[in-house]
Length: 445
Image (cartoon, rainbow, N blue to C red; front, side, top):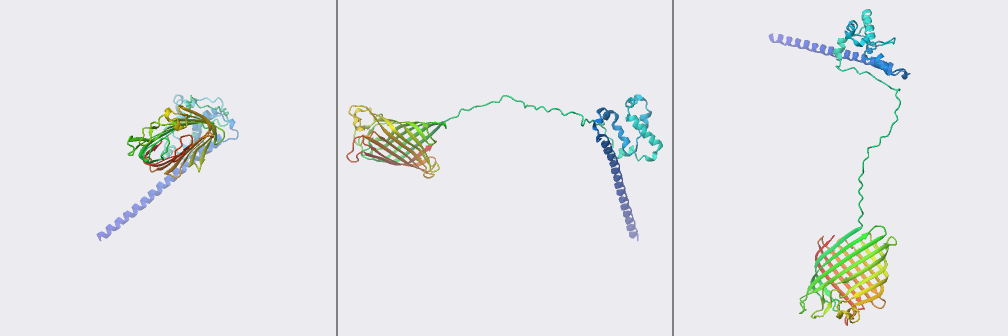
């Protein structure tokens, strides 16, 4: 029986507590709703005041003085829901020294200052108290007064003239201009040092024999092109090779490849690919050359020395989408100069006995091409011909390069030559041939 009573008491307390909580929540929601309604009324009053003052048809009738003095912010109390403000009676009955704002003189103006507002509200409080809807203390509870200085609305809308917009130039300072002189010069170098198997015909004009040897070469190019009219190309070729000669009892080491050659071209553009060209080709060698088992010198430095100066036209070759490049030089007028320092070698190179020099005129052509057959395979060819119409000299140099990587390559060199101005060989006539195959180091920059 005791347990039953306990359960009934607890159930009753729970129901009472639940009803109390629901009542409290309802009261709180009602209070919040009422507070929102009060604030909404005051917001509506502010909107009405704004429309009445600032959206009149004749905006020019309002002046800045009217907004700042005749319609101060306290006038809002006349247009908002009627509220009982406790400080109105104090403001009216205080001494003037304590309320300096109330002593403003209007001089007959319909002044809507604080004193007028407070007197009007006090009359309503005394004669029609039933119209008062709220109290100032309730407003303070709903929306506490901010402790800030009231902002006086100022408006010159429609009164101010549009100011003329004067463009302002950005601050300008000295600009540093750097003029770089264009560089029309290009440099290219090709170097290799290789081992080779060498074949030389018995009547090779510089002498030598077939054997295994090694050769080194340097090719330097320095070219000028101003991309307008003038080209100036320069190429220096240096080659030097040595062979061991077991069959030669007099010379254990001889030169197999020996060349110093300089080629220079000065061109003036005539059309897109044609140039008027003045070309100079000059060549000699470094060391003495010997035949096998002979102490007789076959060639030497400046023995011979050849130079050819020609005037003609160059055609720039750029075929097969840039894979075949080079130039073709055709010169109907060419001057050839040959010098032999050793008089004993003069007849060997077409000079009269006891004469060091030979001068003649003729025509000349040079074909210098580079064809990149595939990525690792290239063919460089030089075909040179000169004739006086009494004698002819033709050289055809062919170099096939197999590039394994940047530093390792193999070369096949084939060099046939014809010269009917030199002494005739009983076996080969005027035809000469040099060939070698090599593998070694190479570098191109």
